[in-house]
Image 1 (cartoon, one colour):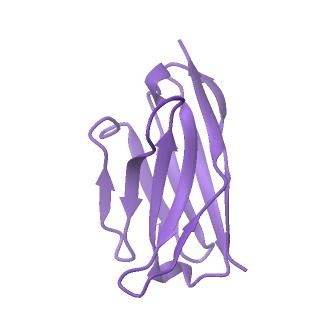
Image 2 (spheres, rainbow, N blue to C red):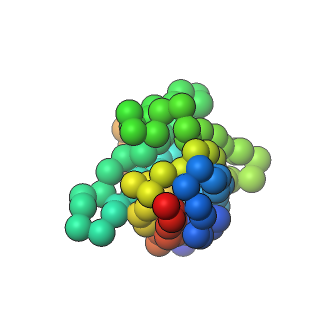
Image 3 (cartoon, rainbow, N blue to C red):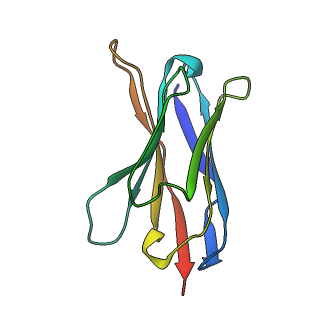
Length: 117
């Protein structure tokens, strides 16, 4: 049974930091691209950051220079370090694992991040 469990969300003041974790089980974690998406109320879900099995990273323009994605294959865990948080970063953050080209796509349940001004 595949599980992706996010943690680390919460309420923080603007300018603060949070680190999200995504603990995976039931998959060959090192073979998956790990992604962080977010969805704010009334908005579409958007890609925030991704990290490939070779540790190549990609970021949305809105978070470049503030967020850092990383992975620890020994712990089957992906991380999203979020610094200099802004109220517009408020959203539910989701972990998404995808293996290409053979398929395998899994979502976590999400963790709420709220940034107060």
